[in-house]
Picture (cartoon, rainbow, N blue to C red):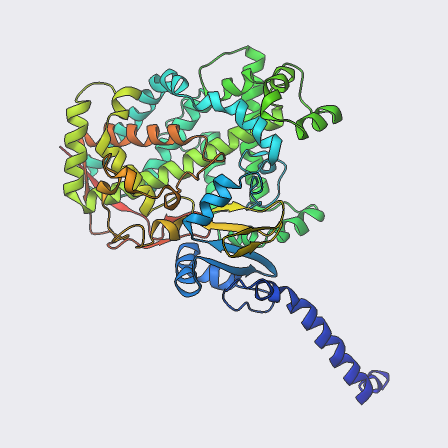
Length: 516
């Protein structure tokens, strides 16, 4: 009876008013872009535009939004406003001219003490310092030193293709090239010979399998990336997400390798050794004075800071894990997409083969002869245009600024759509056709550099670009000399792609290998 007595007309009116006010307050953030005259899709209550983004996938969502609302638009992940940009002039302002305002990326991965130290997500002077320490690791001279290791690893890939050709069965190319990139990382980063095709139970392979399936093919993790408050809430209650636990596995493996190397006083010419050499002994933590100096660091006194300390153990492990992730995922993805291009466009495969035989022949690949494969380099650039591994660049402004006719508010996430820019017919005629000649030496001057962003652009451009290109060209030059990529009944034409953060083939890329 007491419960029923609550539902009087005055109480019901009061409850309705309270609920209406709560609804208005919850919906208020969705007026954000209307107030600053930025167009965009109508958000749904609570979800914003997140459900549309998840349903369509990032590439399709970005392309459709640009076609409907223009090159600068606003959308919402739940109640968080995001600005989506597909305008090369805006890209130039954000990434080059006003870099001091747009220095930092907003976080796209769930917060974690390891991923928070990735150079990709470090901010301001901490990022400058870490990048300066890491730069020598990816220099041409270091790549030349590791070429012997890389040639040894690619022989495993060559042996695997021999087995595939003998079997006359279709194989999934992403899986094939994943073995190659894992082996390459194990050797060039850790000095460990794995041969993952023959040793799938190796500890590093198990770490990788867990990390990459859980985090980049699992829809639950996609939701966590789009809605980062979820892992924060879970972390408050001591609940580890799949992302955290799988990242922890790889970091523990890295720490074990570091400890063993220090114990045995082993010195190798690999990525890890360069990072260890950049670390001063007994400096495992940054004290408060160092933190203050790091925050006020400039390029002018960078060498002074560098002489006081190198990288901490935590920073070393974070960069190793990032290197593992970036090299493995991006390179294996691009190699699998290129194998599809070669199998479905045999005239391009023939041109690549002719150039490799003319330049390298039966000799061992080197940094020098791989860098003279002009047509293969053109093909790689066109591949990265059509199938960029990353679909967006992330930034945010440290202060409110006006660019062209647009107000860019402070601290609002900015997404630069790599995919939209690289598939815009205004800049790339027939964007869905694979045309390597777009990147011919004589045509490069005609290209707008702010419409081609597979490695980013400006001071935060990918630090490992040279390594990625070398690893890609080494694999193709080695395989194509002895084998052809051939379509099979399982080959999907046209290829269906998807992905919320990174691009991948939805149903895999199934091809045969045929001996020449």
